[in-house]
Image (cartoon, rainbow, N blue to C red):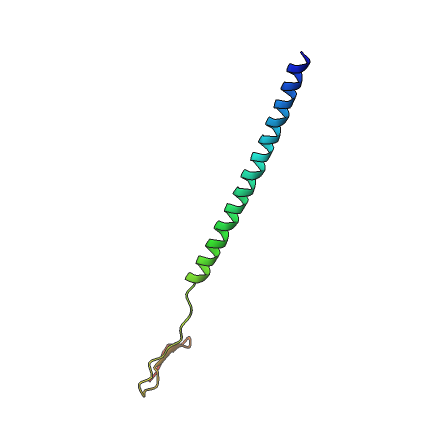
Length: 77
């Protein structure tokens, strides 16, 4: 009877140890996967951000300015 009880306690201890080790490994992998996905998403979003470009066609003419001063639209040629 003592041998059966000792065997049962040993198997229970090994099972609990294995379950905790598996839980730790799976939790580590889950957190690592989440962090990797966030880093990849941030890298892609920074790369896809448009850069403002300021370009004007300058062919010897002044640019036409149009604005509204509240009393009407003004076009400056």
